[in-house]
Length: 75
Image (spheres, rainbow, N blue to C red):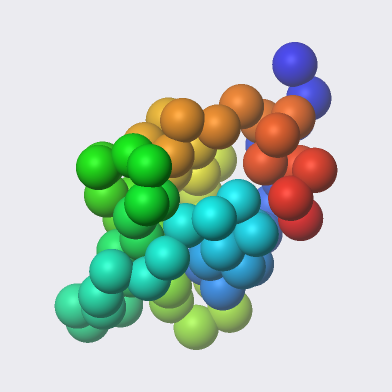
């Protein structure tokens, strides 16, 4: 399994948008995205140019139903 990439919240949002996720809303510094075919909501923290911690990124991928390899291909 490849290592998780070191990315910001904005980069994660762009990658999920390429996977078909749409922005459901924003509350403070957290963006909520949803896939039209999957009813679950993915929460992404977006703090000014800060890298998402590895465990948080893994949680985002689990919520989105993506593997690390699939996510890296979307970057």
